[in-house]
Length: 150
Picture 1 (cartoon, rainbow, N blue to C red):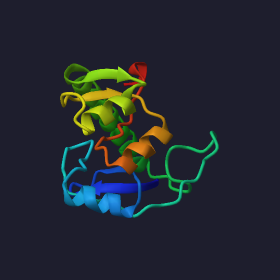
Picture 2 (cartoon, rainbow, N blue to C red):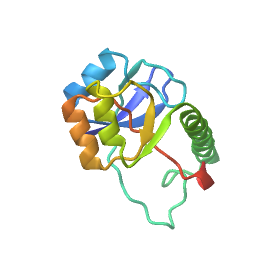
Picture 3 (cartoon, helix red, strand yellow):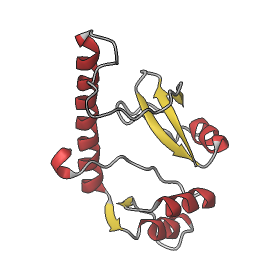
């Protein structure tokens, strides 16, 4: 599995996990990738910076930068993203069947035509998600915020 930083044509950035670079290319070509902020299917790989863990004492603004606009900008983006994720969760809960930790099994049944096609959501381990990708089962991992934080 590989993690890519992605960007839509409106310059919203988000992350996506893929089996390999070919899996990303295939999904992008088939317009299966969508921006979680605006829904655009014009998605490409963005430049990635290495992740660096910061200590809890570091401010939220960029180190050495005293400009307040960056901190406000990041905060506003976080609020916007949280709002969109909350809306997405509500939409999914209202329109999809919850299958809990049976997600991988149920997704396979749908993929192989063993049951009627329907929209489902639930939980899957990273190992199960990798196996689904290997089998060509189409699904989208979604960052799920706990209800008290959504």
